[in-house]
Length: 352
Image (cartoon, rainbow, N blue to C red; front, side, top):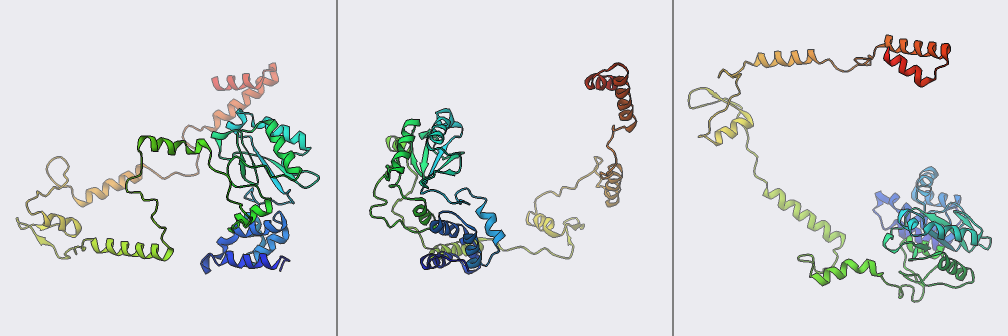
């Protein structure tokens, strides 16, 4: 098995224990964050480790690790700086921010500075259009940045500082962030004591408070049920729904005589008609008041099938091979004779 610390192995067992025994492969995503927390990226050794503890093959693990961009496949700096260059942020200057940082740091997309501090990347969308242009450092937001403020942030990081994000907790390294993404608490002193939501995020809440809008019957103090309680409630609701269903009515197998002595319909239709003794029996007719014979329906069905043969691999209607060949021949002859271009030749062939 791959070499990882005893703490990582213990945490791996804890992650796997979060899932049912027959669903252990669901632990793969947090396990990939866990190995990234130790090595700074998902190395071949990390892929092997995840495969071994979950009983998967390395191809299955690698397929997941290469699909999500948060899993890095080569050594990454202590601080991952992501600049949004998608539509909204780009219009507001996101590309200028990225270009300035790339020139200032001397690196391009997904490249790391020589001192191993900063890895720069452009992001397609950071889901913060109302704060654009934005960039994140290890997934914590810096809102409304411009080229100057972005350079100030990375310079402070390279000098050993920890600039405060606009929203969220104080900055940590990428490895420390990976521990949190694996599902473990940030143990740093006061790690989650700082930060707060931005004003655009609170705008909807403030409007609701201003106009007295609320969800009917909503109680924010309602406790979240445990899985056992939720399963019990679901089972009780299912049993109640089953009990409320009406008992099925069995149809009589023998024909039932109607009031005029004729046999009444059997099955579900017959039961429905018997349940409504006063209802008139409607029989489809051919317009003369006479019900069609069963043989007539079969004959009509056979005629319809004969008139509509199934599709085949044959040429569709109108696709005449002779016309195509004539067009091609005349197009070639026209080009050879007078040097007409392909467009002229096609037009001539189409007219013919």
